[in-house]
Amino acid sequence: LDLTSAVGLGPLKPTLVDSNPIDGQKPGTSGLRKKTKVFMQGNYLNNFVQATFDAIKATGTDVSKGSLVIGGDGRYFNDLAIQTIIKMGIANGVTNFWIGKDGLLSTPAVSAIIRERGSSDLSPKSCLLDCRKMDVTGKAFGAFILTASHNPGGPEEDFGIKYNCENGGPAPEKLT
Image (cartoon, rainbow, N blue to C red; front, top):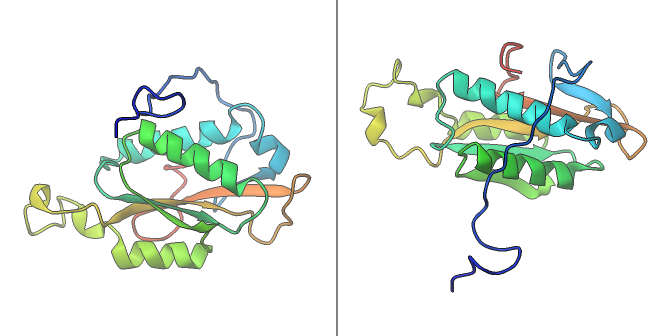
């Protein structure tokens, strides 16, 4: 069944959206936390996600090989943020996603998933086999985690996002 010409269906086509750096959008020690309404404004979430994808790819990570884990603590705006991350992931070449049921994955669960099925063995420097011939679609190269930790959630409260690397731990500041 070919749905390419159906309204609203068919292949996703990336579009470029002009954006500028946003004052005050600087991650802390473990991600970016702001009021939910700030994340919902304009390109606030999109800027952080794209900047993270740019940094990931600049390290030499091929995001088309491996999987991106996405999950969060279920707070307000998680569902829309997950959809944004998936769309931006596809536009950046990500071909596989692992998303928690109903978008739910705690930070420790995400770290465990990455460590269990992470991509540390994909580095050409540490790989004893020919990595170009390995099936890596089951490996996780990192994760976006949607949480503001202990801060209250809701439309008037806090939202947060962080990126964990292929080792399951928080991304270094140079990456985010």
